Amino acid sequence: MSFVPYSFRFAYIIRRISRHGLLGSVKLIPVNLRFALYALRPAAIAARRRERALDREMGINTAGDLPGGAAAAELGISTEIYSYQAVAREEFDEMLGCLPQNVSSFCFIDIGSGKGRAVVLAARHRFSEVIGVELSARLHRIAEQNVAKVGPSLPTRIKLINEDARCFAFPRMPTVIFLFNPFGEEVMRDVVRNLERTHQSTNVPVYLLYLWPFQVKVIVESEMWREISSGRHWKAFKLGTFEAP
Image 1: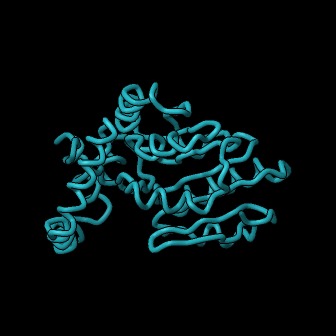
Image 2: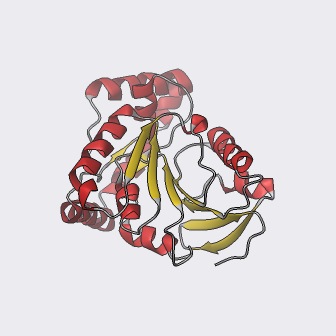
């Protein structure tokens, strides 16, 4: 399901032509066709049906995607932004399995929270607080609508913030950061270094759950994190030298 208006799609096409040139854009057509064919595979169709079924079960609207180029066109910026896609519940629960059993003292923060599925799922796990940080105003408004629907029935309060992740002030408390491959290397480095500076003297546990970790080198190169667990599409890290759970 896509909600991208034609004006954004047109702006996205113009942006691509400006970046790659007309010939370069034409050369990208086979890549886009392969993506379209992949989306028509029975497994992909079944996955989208599961997404919609989960939304119906939870009473929210988080399925579908938003291409990164369309998001950049909406925001009027050239910084590389990756596409929005909601996390699968099974994969999310698997990642949370590497955390301490009692997370009641932890703040859960989803950087690039999109339409809010991860924060709603996290709020069911009784964190101290759940925060979603999203740059796109359109996705943020949808997340607000979702939280307004189900928030009162959840055991943990959800706070949604519409701002650049690089400007977010991380709380100085036990923290779980969730990333679903939201942006490229440059922004990733700024966000991770900000997180490290915040906790360089707090001596509290900080976990980073990274789904589709394409910019994992940013974490590895700092030598302040150690990998504590991993799955098929994700890696989990812990900041500092604390004992693993």
